[in-house]
Amino acid sequence: MTAPLRTLRRIGAVLLLAAAANLPLAAQVRSAPTRPAAASAWETTRLRNADYVDLLHMAAKLGWKPQWDVPGRTLTLRSPDDTKIVFEMDERDCHLDGVRIFLSERVAAHRNTLWVSRLDVVKTLAPLLAPATQALVLPQPPRLIVLDAGHGGTDPGKSNTRHKLHEKDMTLDVVLRLKPLLEARGFRVLLTRKDDTRFANSPIVDLQRRADFANKAVADLFLSIHFNAVDPKDAARVTGSETYVLTPQSMLSTSDEKPDEMTGTAFPGNRHDLGNVLLGFHLHRRIVGDLKTSDRGYKRARFAVLRFVQCPAALIEAAYLSNDAEAARVGTPAFRQQIAEAIARGVESYATTLAGLHAAAAKK
Ligand SMILES: [Zn+2]
Image 1: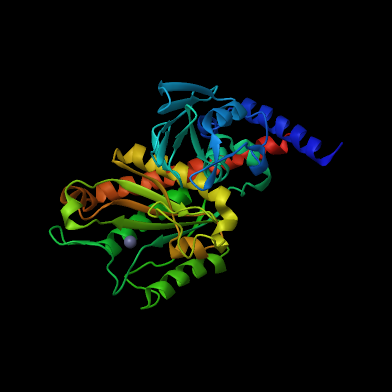
Image 2: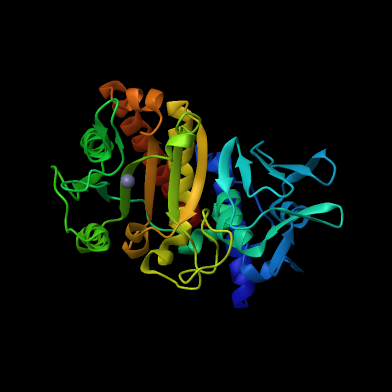
């Protein structure tokens, strides 16, 4: 049997078993594609200086049913198990079972259909919608988790003066709550800091040391916890949670409209693009779902801790300290406990999904 034929047979077996395994969380974001989602498998058209894939073509390959909510403008794709993803013309985000996911490039309208960039398909959509096809390179479920409480010591992070809250204290409190919740689920947990300290006065050295800590411990998962803030003029209207994972090479970070000096670089963290995309989605879905907070989106960034860390990693901006009402909520132990519990459930969901995908692949 030729190697490609073996691969196809293997993937077919994985899909059948994954479908039969009734994986609780994977099942909600997985469907049965008929072909491997290799980069070369997608027919592309050159639009806006990038290669784009017709969403109807992607749907057909994944076995998802398309439905035009507004012809040529708003498209819903539905999996056989009724997971749905919604795309809208010119928008940079899409919604997978209601969870807001940012793409690298805007959705383009062309020839009466909608298109997304090939890199968004290969790096974000195919791994989320059909993770079973990616089983060969999936990370193992995590055992050792490093939790990083953002900021510390002379670096308070963001603050809310009215409620006298500093980000560094809130992040440490959440991490201390999260540790036993993860341990109770069988994970080993290490903390980059356990008290009010920082690793270096230089911000970049401080961040590099946090990543080094995880790398030296040979962590399987790294989570950096933060709280957010916007300019005072926007503070009243901006609330909610964001989850970040490292931007894959050659793709735009969510805050970028055009490439910058880092866009073309592959960082150590990019070896875990597939683990990252699953981790970010499972975390974000739990955080916005469980906290019932505004969904600011599952995003991509080249933050230093995410670039340097050598395992799947995410950075969570749990809430906005710049918004007085939200800061008041963050100031309560009950809400910080809810944040910790949502993150713990997100990690569990990610680990269960990986375990299910590996088990299905092993039974082939
Ligand atoms: Zn921060």
